[in-house]
Image (tube, rainbow, N blue to C red):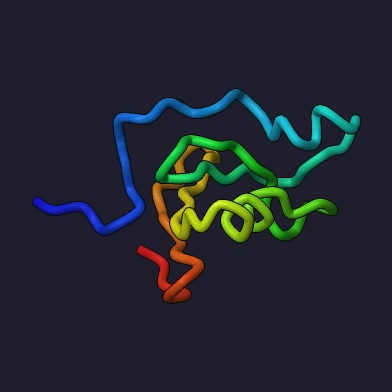
Length: 82
């Protein structure tokens, strides 16, 4: 099976929570993991929206939910969930 572009299942997550929020004593609702580099960022319902900021600044288009029991991916370029 060929994985969609921007997904590397071998890369480990960058941490257990949003490191950007932790750096400024921020908080988050839900976590998202960059499917390309493993960066953990907070969701768009969180005040700082670090997962989206990461996608925009790096060009890494695909995130995966980093919440227990959730396995979906979101592609920022195509607005597709899979």
